Image (tube, rainbow, N blue to C red; front, side, top):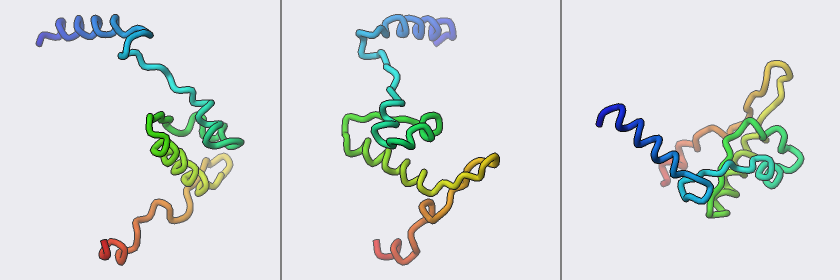
Length: 100
């Protein structure tokens, strides 16, 4: 395909993507999601994590729960930022892997 053709096709597809079209992607309401899952700590998450929405509520709940666990292991170093502590990133002991 020639470069001019692919550009033309891209323009044609984007012109079709209106709010009534299934191709239209709406932005997530990140403030609402942060408040729902993180409560008073929502401002910390607002610009620090990728937000996700799913038709399966259990998957979505687990996704945000894991971010809460990540945040629970963050320590504020002031001007130097944050550091992750604890073993939440560690692999299970070798004994567990052998038993699987």
